[in-house]
Amino acid sequence: MTGCFRQKGGHQEKLLGCRDFGTDCDFEACGETAEESLTTAVDHARAIHGLKDISDKDRMRARAAVQDAFCVPKGGYNPGGGGF
Image 1 (tube, rainbow, N blue to C red):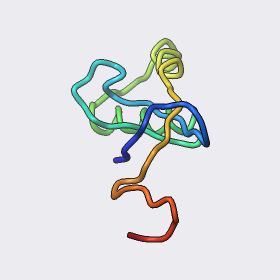
Image 2: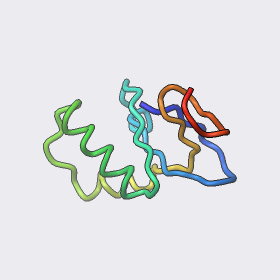
Image 3: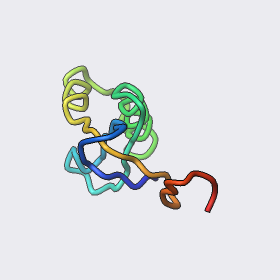
């Protein structure tokens, strides 16, 4: 899981979270592109929430919900690079 800051400015990744759809789930898909985030979110929805088919309407709704974010890998952000 990532830690994400939903804000504008700088290099932005694309974020799509389960909570954006009213579910009680903290999962957030973060990727370089909206499609990457959507693919990760769909894989999660199938594996964890048991969704079998994702309708075109739901895919459009998900694309519309993608937000710009600064995503931090689990464990934190080290602006100087390198390990912690």
